[in-house]
Amino acid sequence: MPGLAAEVLPDGSVVEASDAFVSLVGKDRLPRQWLARLSPGSRGRLTRLLAQQADFQMSLEWSNGDAGTTWLACSGWWSPEQRRHTCFLADVTATEASREAAQLFIHRLHLVFDHLPLMVAYHGPLPEGRCLFANRQYAKLFGLDDKTILGKPVRDIVGKALMQEMVRQARSFFEQHATVVYPCSVPQGDGRWMRLEVTMVPDAGPDGQVRGAYVLMTDITQRYETERALRESEDRLARFMEASAEGVVFHRGGLITDVNPAACALYGADAAHLLGTPTMSLVVPEFREKAQRMVDSRTETAYESAIFNARGERIPVEVIGRSIQHGGQPLRVTVVRDIRDRREAQARIEELISGLRAEKERAEAADRAKSVFLAAASHDLRQPIHALGLFLTAL
View 1 (cartoon, rainbow, N blue to C red):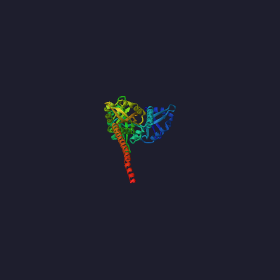
View 2: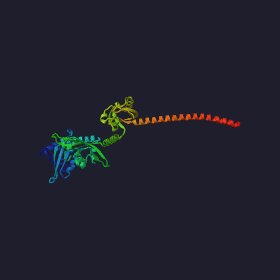
View 3: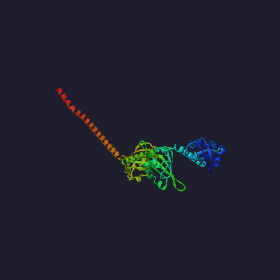
View 4: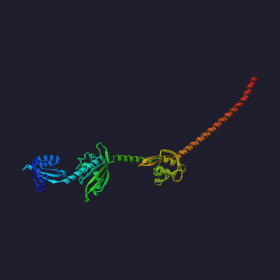
């Protein structure tokens, strides 16, 4: 027989062998001593398979002494007539080394990706897209582990609903083989939903054909909830600004960035005209220094001031300002309240108080005049009465 071949009994004894096999194991190691050249694991597995009356295939780890190890692929064919196996062997050391390197590489991939807060997988070519690699987080997301998920078609892993969403969102990936990034939601066992950001990258070969896809999933549930809360907060703020009867002005670096309708009505100009306008240019000159100090302090402040509207009219206002953070940048929010009605009411009250004070003073003066008159009249009336008393005494 050409190549490495031997007729082997169930106990491992070699009955017949090719010249190449004899040259490999050594003539002095036949019929059974050749088994000692195998590693303990290979020797044990081969012995068990030779004892079975069935064909088999396995890899043998063959020791070459100081020269190292040779891997042999062994195919054993059972012959019922001769009651022994015909074994054919082939040197697959290079292939086995590549397989071990691949296994080592995959092991290192797991070491890396199993400790990252990411869900990573590699799926083979469509239409099945079988899973060829997945880290623990990716498999756990779909109720599997990193062993049972291997070889499963993508539809069986993600389910029908999510597969339809994937096809809809990643149309350019399937049709144009382009990298896509899209959000999706995956139900959890407790009734909650996990929000994911999915990135799909095609793996194209030298011929341009897509051999598979790299899939990266990132849990963005917390970010999504934060962004939703922020959007809701901004919507509430926008509705408040629209409905507020008081002017609200946002400014950064001394320039107006946003205003509400009430502020536009107060200044007598539309929002497009006010955006980008320096805030101090709208403040009456004698209040600008005070206003600048309040802005620079970045604390909550409240004070009375005056502004100019678009027609150059001077309007007394009450200003309430505070600093906030928006998008990581400091932003100043100022509520501008028109106090012309208050000033007019205060003027009317002061005028009324002055009138009441004058009336009071006139009443007090009249009371004093009455007292003087009564004192004088009393003196004049007592004189005749006193004279009458004297006349009565004389009579």
